[in-house]
Length: 183
Image (cartoon, rainbow, N blue to C red):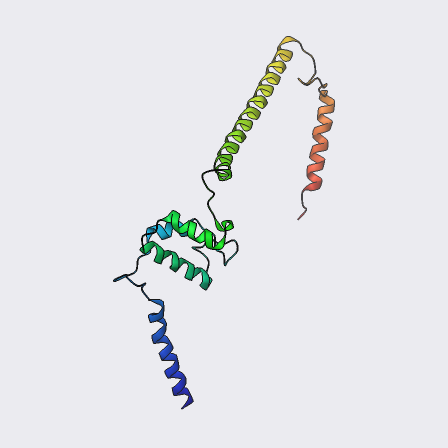
């Protein structure tokens, strides 16, 4: 008997859940489609109920109710700016996800591209100066090697003799041999 009651309760819940999830707002006939003005406003707002989440992504029931309220107001003819102002007026300016395009918010729009351009300029200047130094050193080294038979590096350091160079190569071979694993 208890299993039949449990089964009937489970079937009743299964029949009610789709009906509750598919409620259409008043004044809307047929399939509900989100209003584009409400979607635009929701995309520019942070959720007051899920810190760090956009309103469109917050899974809290309160956020769902707020999104539904914005959809209902959009169906009444409100535009995205009015919806955004209404939500910020009710919950606070800290939930604005997109900065204003005036006042201090204008700096948030202008600073990143200016910083990017300045960074590209610094990188270009650094590359140009490094290339100029390298080209100057190569030209200087070519002048030294063509002008005289001095055993010196273009930086002014003396070059090793043949005997020293052979000792260095042998030391490098010994070092490499000592680092190789023995199997």
